[in-house]
Image (cartoon, rainbow, N blue to C red):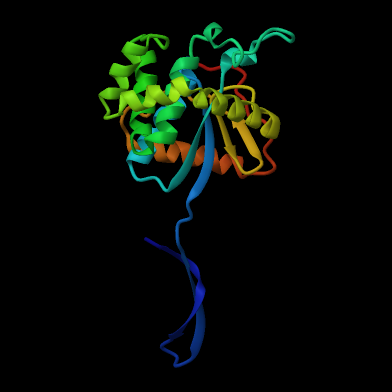
Amino acid sequence: MCSHHNSVAKKVRRDSGRNESNTLRVTCPVTRSFALTFDYRCPYARIAHDHVVEGLRGGADWKVTFVPFSLGQSHVEPGEPSVWENPDQDSGIIAQQLAIAIRDGQPDRFVEAHHALFEHRHSAAGSLRDREILSEVVAEVGVDVGAAWADVDSGRPLEVFKAEHTGYAASHEVWGVPTFVMGAAAVFVRLLDPAGGDRQLAISTVDRILDAMEWENLNEFKHTSVPR
């Protein structure tokens, strides 16, 4: 639905008999496209993604690209094997590969599965390594678990993970989660509270982040302390 502001010329007859030009601008909402990094181990990523998921559930006009990012890889010392070469060293990598398999192969199930994996980790202190447990989590939201694991076992999601992690690190200097990426801009964001099921709060919260990203004069805005 379009909203009306001042601008599209329209003739209006005044009481004086004179024709004067008034303006009425009709502005249609524009889909906002952005990417958002995730690693299921990070509590701040869980909060940011909770707002995004609740916003999408509430009908937000966003096109979101969910980008896996390995906190484990970001801590690998130079000269040491990467998590792509030795995935067993990374406690979150199997869950992220599962998420990629669902995102790419069962996109209609991804948002709910993604939210369920975050809640499994942070609300239930659940394991991100155990395939059987992860299977139960995503099966509850309708994921074809067999197809997803077959994709993981093919090795494709690990290659996609490596490409997306390294690609965003190179193109936007992404170094952590949650990072919002929109156009050439990338910002690391920490929210303190999840949306708590409030979809309008979620939409307004994410839109405020995106608005700030479009403010070209703003480089850094950081509280020196959090009074909580």
